[in-house]
Amino acid sequence: MATVREVIERLQHYDLDAHVAVSLWSTDDVLCMVDEDDGLKLTQEQANKIIDDIDHHHDASIGINWEVIRCHIDFLEQDLEDTKENDDE
Image (tube, rainbow, N blue to C red; front, side, top):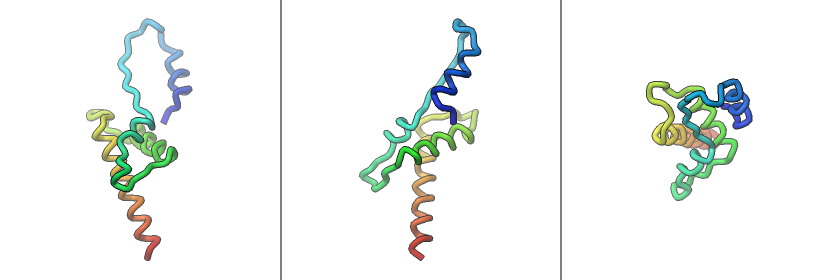
């Protein structure tokens, strides 16, 4: 995943008057989707991993949207549950 600094560096190569389409998602978007009432609390590191995974593996024909973020949160939650079950054995 790119940091804001890296995105700014990339954008500096464009003409300031060039027309572009940009969609920006951040770890804040991931964290606001987490329902702590369900017993899940993500760390900043986990949210960073989710954003990185989304950035590197999203389907360009679908894009990045709230449902994609929700699915990645669910994947991480399942991984955490599987790890806990394995540790308990």
